[in-house]
Image (cartoon, rainbow, N blue to C red):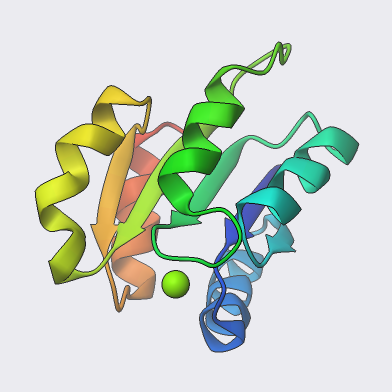
Length: 122
Ligand SMILES: [Mg+2]
């Protein structure tokens, strides 16, 4: 089963996102911040895609992305940044750091499906 990692400090967002993506047939892993996500990647280096929140305590999405892209993984996962209006100015920075796509929060099932198609997961 294709593994997707959902990284967000909001339990509600993780709950909603998990439901959406399980419905699409994915195995969904969760992390509540970047450091937590690095631990999950260590245990599951075969994660195919990551939905990544920007603003999180401990380690934010951008710092996680940079750390992820420096890891010697057999295959780097696709990363979709999940951003709010306030983060829009930073999107180029995230794309430069190796993000594949971004979506605006709050995301709907259709948007998530579209973006996973764009990055070639669906
Ligand atoms: Mg957040």
